[in-house]
Length: 509
Ligand SMILES: Cc1cc2nc3c(=O)[nH]c(=O)nc-3n(C[C@H](O)[C@H](O)[C@H](O)COP(=O)(O)OP(=O)(O)OC[C@H]3O[C@@H](n4cnc5c(N)ncnc54)[C@H](O)[C@@H]3O)c2cc1C
Image (cartoon, rainbow, N blue to C red; front, side, top):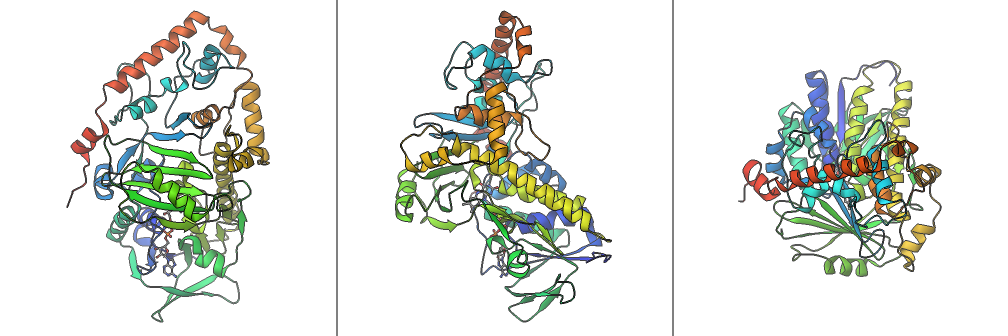
């Protein structure tokens, strides 16, 4: 593809990945780029993927999506974090709440002051005079009260307000983006791709052959064909790095249930015998699913556990999905970039797949192969994409590895497994110093790592010595004031149900 000007793109696949990519590229490049999406309504989409993280707001802004309109059309709700039930030990729960915890003082992250106050050896859930870590999270305090508003900051204070993401119906989201993209000139073809044709001289992809005999040629291709990886794997044989030895879950069963009240503004993840169960509340239903390791539990038993742990009647039969955790060795190979499930899979414990689509799109836009030799662009694209995947992988492994569910085979295996060096040194650094240091490609930053480390029972042995410079009575007063301001602000918010009814309720036909 050297020195060729890119004028046409074909996106193979019209799931969340395909339509997010089409909408973003159409918005950025406009009519200069001809964009075609080929999708097969006969094959359909994976249709799960209902929880997101706050960075999705950047994507919404890029494609100029009106948040209320999008929530109305996707049965969407607000998400303030993820509650982890029984992950550290049975009977304990904590939350990975989005947004800040407390407020830093003089360059030293807030949690050092908190840890000094509670005493380093106390259990994470113990309520001493400084309360629990999450008393300093407005997101958690609002989530537990089922409250929500688009609060920018706590009135009359420098404290941040709420940080939110969304839950939505994945099928409706793809349809919404499809309308948006087609409104910007993207061409849609509903047909099955039966062959990928390569240029004999370069090995680049030349054209896609459709079932009806048509051939579609383009300068550049984006593989959004899901787990199949039609172009990136089946045609280009790029290779896959398998992470099952660190993340042994390889199956999920998903089932929707009727809505319950109050409408909780957070995802719940409950650890089970050999995996975990998600609960994602939408306006019209609740999405549930059991992610598990088939080496430790049968499909039948996993199904029984899923159904036994629902909080409302199932409204469909459970659907089985198989996957292999890992990533494609290169996300950009020859004249093909892959997105979404075609690029790899990390289980949905921290709702990161849609985010990975979003950042891969952003990276493609920044390093777009308009013309010229693309070798350096491709190298940087693959380097950054790999790093991003690996940071998220480590974060997810932490949830499994730092458990205290002794005597349960699956959890014993996770606790005793060898973990990546990058994660091992991060845990050790936290143990030694309570310090958390994040690189720019690390999606999850300090407050996320802190909550999961602390929530999973990783105890630091020391805090930053600077916290000694603050008088104990001043420190206690500072913490008390923060707690009171946050609790007071959370109590004044409307319930999520009231907020949705006022701003973004879906039509009930
Ligand atoms: C159990 C589970 C739970 C998940 N939960 C979350 C979550 O909470 N949050 C999150 O961010 N992500 C989640 N994900 C991931 C999320 O579902 C995906 O990242 C997202 O849906 C993107 O999927 P996709 O578009 O890559 O693939 P798909 O939805 O599979 O779309 C593939 C597209 O390719 C087309 N196609 C395939 N073959 C052909 C062919 N031969 N010819 C023509 N078209 C073809 C299909 O028709 C379809 O349009 C979850 C995934 C799983 C498996």
